[in-house]
Image 1 (cartoon, rainbow, N blue to C red):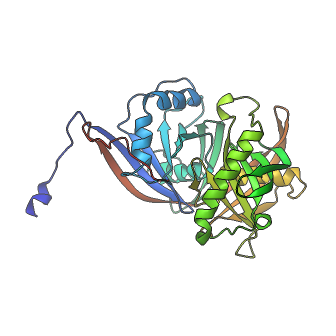
Image 2: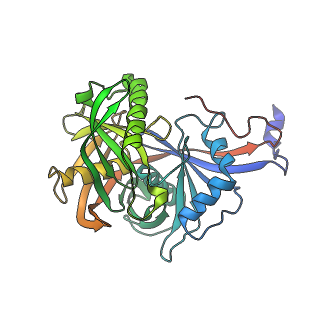
Image 3: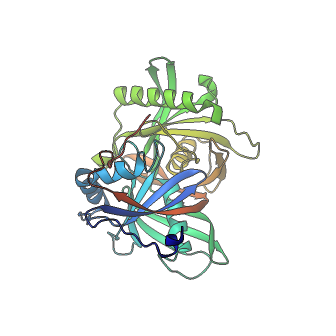
Amino acid sequence: MQNLQNWNWEPPQNWLSVKTIDLHTGGEPLRVLYGGLPAIQGKTILEKRRYFRDHMDHIRTGTMFEPRGHADMYGALITEPITKDADFGTFFLHNEGYSTMCGHAIIALTKLVFDTGMIEKEGDRPELIIDAPPGLIRAKAHRSKGVVESVSFLNVPSFLLLKDAIVEVPGIGTVQFDVAYGGAFYAFVNADELGIGLEEKDYNQLIDWGRRIKYAVMEKFPITHPYEPDLSFLYGTIFTGAPLDPNHHSRNVCIFAEGEVDRSATGSGVSARAALHYAKGELKINESITIESILGSTMEVKVTESTTYGPHKAVIPEVTGKAWLTGRNEFWFDPVDPLREGFIFR
């Protein structure tokens, strides 16, 4: 293997070559696409996301699906900033398409840009302004000796849309649920009332029931964002229940997109939960709660202030979590590979 010492092979020029860095937040993967991409047109993040969807969706499927990814892979794409004071822009990718907001991605992206030197800022509490699909996200890194140990971000206005609603779900029966928005819309259901567990062994049933509940709610109830039609859809189902660690507030498991299981506690999901609990009088301003994921990893969330958002009484949640870098990739797309756009088993 002597040739390995001088090995410098490069793919042919007609191959697409996409550079990524991988991370995870509480176990939930994030594949960040940062190099080798064609120009993405658009004056806003939603326009850029729409352009990418309409002209480059094969890059999403090629990097999220097998053989380069898997059914539960999640991604983000870094763009130039859109607004004057923003540091960069981003939008989010998964097995079904494109999500409106992703807290675990914001946490991981903050870790990425500071720990790798993509963006340099002084101090132990450097801040970012990020252009994201639902609006500006403000993130703060908590650093020790130059390394980001945790990240907090202020999310967009979050609110309760539907309270104590009822739906008939095929194969399950009558289900009571709430719908809340934390950058994306989620249907929240009580796992104990349904008799379903929230541990790793319950993985397949959670996917099945999460999808059934999502589709049943979508069929019967309009999900409308007050300003953006592109954000007016139900992203997933979140099962809530008692924590395994008595020091924590609760546990939730999010089933989103096309049956993906969030390994983390779900940043936009705990934001929506903060809005839900505040609206029901179960959470006070500046009261922090810790929520477990299916893995037992955690995120903290608190309501920093109350506000209004269109016709809705809303809150500004602050979410805190931890992320880790896991690797760097350069993915090649051979134009004659019949599976270059990927495939998925779900």
